[in-house]
Length: 450
Image (tube, rainbow, N blue to C red; front, side, top):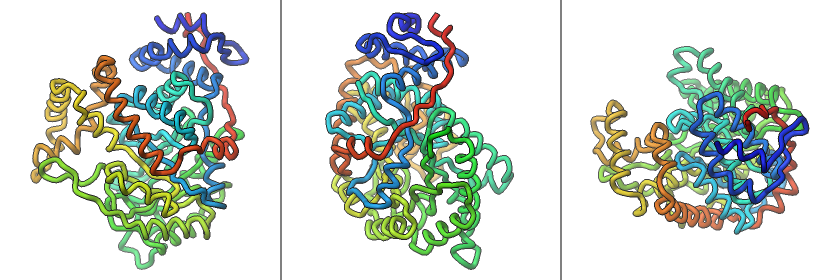
């Protein structure tokens, strides 16, 4: 057992973790995180907690982006923070992110996972946090690590059927995420907007009232010394573009309703994208046109009138590469990226065709009921293959190095391109200046090393 070998590398006591052999720790991390991910539930939790405490002792600590975003609200620094959803091969992919971040001196970047992704990728917040932090240690990354709950969403049909149960579920998810040291939470109650109401503020009322209720919970449970960064949302992604009046109606309503201390740090808006892109019958992606002028206008209002970091763009990873430079040019504070990374993995020439077909056959069998009548098989596979990572997680992790290494090189090149276009190179200094992680020590069970 790898865990036992840790005894020669770390000591665990009342004062927490002490690292005796940093080189030995890095060499051991691949096996340790693998053992943790695929252990039984009881041992899994213990190992994840040990790994997180090791990372904190190493200098890679979970942190809130709040300080940086307050600085953005005062004086926009000219870059857009990438928030990356890693659905599969998470440890290897996170290592690729940290490698490129170190090479380009990037400090402003976020790892996130959405409510829906937690389910179909089978990555609970504690696992996701431990895997990302293990990758940081493995690559020698020291500094704040931003973990984010993305689209902690109230599902409209669930809410209409039973508001208390749906709200309770999201509250439970928030508590689980904060306990796992996700100190950045995006609340998405834009699904509750009621367009039948006569005024924009009344249309937005269910949205800002529920956001305020969930934000109050976050402020209540956040650890001492940490201000969790909270995001709101006004435009359900894939629907019509957001407007300045909607932004003002929502933020004014939130201000009037929320009395729990610091409010929102950012606001997600809709400007023309949809999650995963729009798939054509042959399986290719339709070209997407973002309304960058709307994004500029909304970011400007959010910053100047409400002190937020700016507007957040979702569903952007499948945009053409030449579009990404526009995000910092329009003052966008954060951009969410997911499907494009998944596509690189699935479409890589280095992924064996037989393995890809194995995953696709699983999808066609297990999710056959999700295929819509007007979908071609190519459209169905493209829109559903995100669900090929969860149940088959071990098969993905067990792919040999000669397959994974070149795929990760493709991903690392993509991360580098995005970091460059979003202008987050050399942001370690501003992050170190504005973000002071308060290390929350968690009690671990020393017997896990026996």
